[in-house]
Length: 300
Length: 239
Figure 1 (spheres, rainbow over the protein chains, first blue to last red):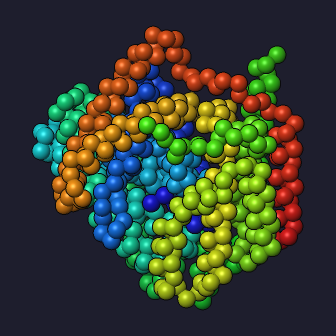
Figure 2: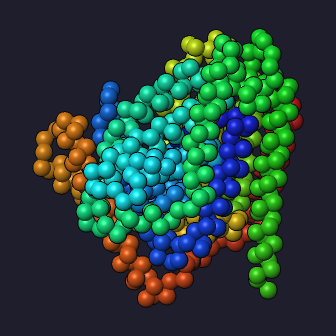
Figure 3: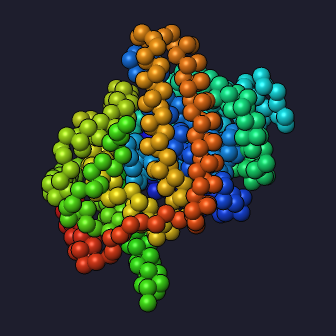
């Protein structure tokens, strides 16, 4: 589900970069207050755990293999904010070490595998588990959280690919969601099983998530989970034959017009391309310059 | 046990390795952005990018087969796009090859960035460019723990493979995996707590110092200037 660079157009990838950067900054700000010391090594260890869990595969249909994705697990163990931060580290490490993902596509991957899976999985878990769940109910809720977290991110990923014009909605959504509905069964079983082991030995760990929630988490989770579905419904309810067409109109990326087969006309595309490149380069240079200046000031 | 799947060639000594982390982050991000913006028909620009990649790969001294292996990562998405192709009659071979070329170029840039920079320096560069401390520390811990965990997982896998023949039914396979991962999680959690106590008693101050970090020098300016010149040329040829 890690989208490599090149599959998303700039109009999709760059806004998601901005959204994910804002999400990381927001989470970091909240964690500064919440995570006094002890929390950061634990987050680091759990990130390493999720990263390492990829090495243990199980066979899926047709010779492919699946592994634990871990979004729901992190959300339940750490709560959404710290869980997102831990997952962000995993996604960045996957991009840097395994080239699973890309530089400009990092925002989209952080959004799908980090934000959507974490907040979505957390929402499902809290709704299903209630206040103080017994072991069976907790396991069932964890299973649901694992399954839905994959499903949410698969849908979000398929939508981004469709908006970029790479894979049309009518193919992307069934393919991504169908495949992950299958893989999700394993993810749910693993999440539930691992959590019940943790609950049996260290009940204090499994109870941690409850203490770290506020209204903002709930609202954020709802928005993140609902947004792709709203887009999908908008696309489906329109009377245009191609859902992608109507989705593009609904999201304002393209004006209505029959017969325009290209996603964006070449001239406009070139204009966007040049301005977006310039923006990226200028932002990068500003960051570099700022840090160089600060360094100079620090060193007398 | 030995692990070599993480920043394996970062300790080589080449002009690209000698650059400061921030220079490479900025340079490669700009190049990646530029590749993404190229219109599919910009054949000469893609050729220029391939020349650049060839030069950079040669300079970096990273083995070619390693880079080639890493580029396989885009396969699942290429497959998905290929599955979708019959549903869209407006896209042809040119579109598909542009997509492939673009993602290949970007992947090679990413491989070059991470394999010419030690991870500690990369983190230092990210921190100095304003990435939140919590995230950078988290990545630092991840990097330090991953080798320990990988060891543990390899031992567990070896132990389980010694005690069975072939594959089990999926249900059994999953329950085995669950107990392995559950045990690993508990062990690693308790190890994290112990390690944190040990770190505190040795004067840990929420920072990972880097031994002899590279400084921003004239080389970095030259590299950035060359990248800018290249991008300017691309802009001229594709416009």
